[in-house]
Length: 300
Ligand code: NAP
Image (cartoon, rainbow, N blue to C red; front, side, top):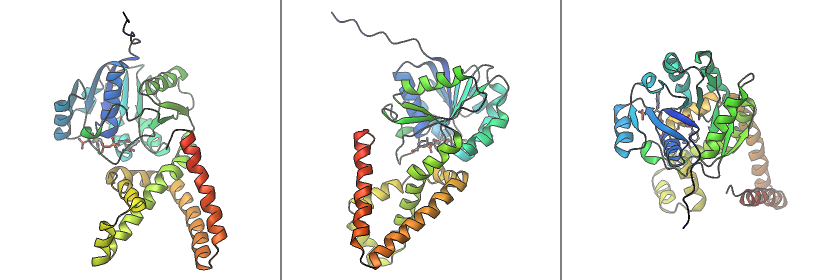
């Protein structure tokens, strides 16, 4: 008779999530399923979202009092749009338990650290992080426990942080199925600028351009939307609040990469104008290699 595998003891007694949208609810579901925590509570801005989270049983309890939720929690993860992280940290700070870890999931790191750090009470370990996993859907109904499986989570510990706290948070993310990498916050913002923020900006532009087309041409675009355009519409359907905050808070890195992108686009434009097929072919051949590398790394 096979004996069921015993789960290791939970890493944390009480996890509190501030914000329970796609990312917050996916963390709750993964943490509960994997036995990483004993209790998970959440607090969110609106009663409607709290009601949904409670109805779906995503957490043990979800309310709208952010400060009350973090009481006695030994891990607090702020899962709200980047622009709201600082204010939420200010609100929860007085109720944070000494020795607890506070983290976030923001897609931008330097601005979140700038906004949250001043409010983190002495004796509380602030370990920022960013799970690189998501979909174009939002809200607690969009969450699922496998969201982080096989995906990277970047942890950006600050100078002087307790290493054991950073390692514990990394362990939590590994428990949720992620692969963890430690990175400096400014480097994170540069890398994400190219792999995530720029592609979203391009998708918003392309779909916006198609939408600006006049009458019949516009309806033909929608009707015949094929592979390429359809993929862009999915990305361009991502949450407007989240992405507004990302661009406003990673301004320098995005503007820098956008300038380089424009140069490369002009290069392609020129090659098309002058019929320089060899230049086009050479670039397309090179970019194909990137796709192959992604497939090899199982990140496609
Ligand atoms: P979401 O599904 O839209 O959920 C956002 C949550 O934050 C909701 O609980 C919402 O509350 C709350 N919230 C929104 N504005 C707030 C404010 N001003 N003050 C307090 N609470 C507020 O968003 P998400 O996709 O989970 O994203 C959350 C964070 O994860 C963002 O920082 C984003 O950068 C990061 N992230 C997202 C993805 C992705 O693909 N979506 C991937 C990685 C990281 P109500 O519903 O009650 O208003």
